[in-house]
Image (cartoon, rainbow, N blue to C red; front, side, top):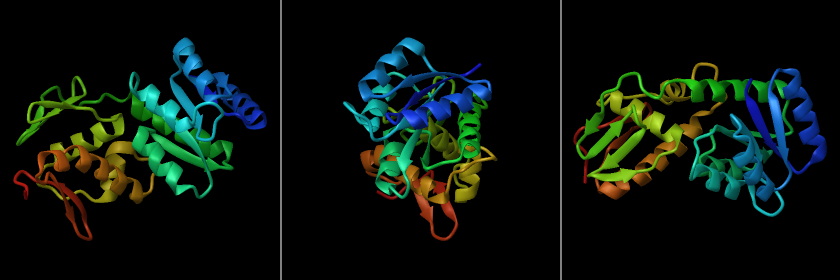
Length: 229
């Protein structure tokens, strides 16, 4: 039975979500402030976190940043409808998905199921390391380095980079990237691919001062073995 931490300061929403999730067989724990969320996270060790962005004491984004320093537990952030800023910053901070309020319980359950499946899936199809120029990836340990220097990636970033490196020299469409990283039954739009490619470039291309991930106009992206400087 998976345990879900619901972090929400609106008691009506948290009670409703708690009731529905327990009806579906999940166990739950609650937190109504950012600081309480961190305390409950340490004490309860949840399998998934539903995290509201607007919280008393500490914002949801700050809670997420602190959790990501020590855990890759799946996190779905809850945002106000149309708040693109919150969505982008939530993904940047390491969220696995986002859901805009108000939401249906059916959509929430589907997103939770997809995120939990992805989290439970093995990180590596093979145990061998992947290497392109100065970039090296170890799927077994989920570690990476660039020119000998360690790089920290979120789980989503790691899975996307692994997909690129396994298909080096091939043009990958946004849709194929989404399927490889988020699975078949996803709720991710193509703009999220562009956001995550931006994160990868910031950690790889901009640091190495040479191109690793190339944009192929009208088609998608490609990991190149020889990049422009």
